[in-house]
Length: 116
Image (tube, one colour):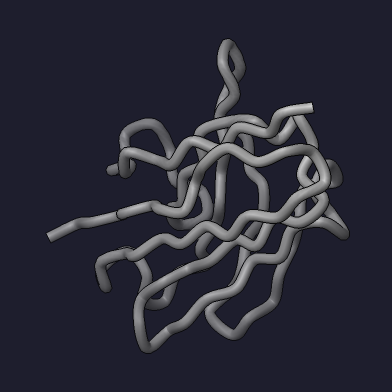
């Protein structure tokens, strides 16, 4: 069964930290580069960070130096640590495999709101 369950979102003030988690089914997680995406109101979904199966990471310029993506291959879980949050980080955050498109399965996401 395909499953993606994001959690950990909430309301924080600018400059604070927040940690997100995503539990994925093995069919999605195993052997795939995983990614966090976000979608702000009125905007398209954008790629935030990726992590390969052996831990190589890449970040969007807008979050580089503030966000950290990690994964636990034994738990089929990917994480996103958000530090020094900014109001422009406000969005619904989703995890999925890299290159997931609109026709792939997506979870419900988790809302992150950063107040100024």
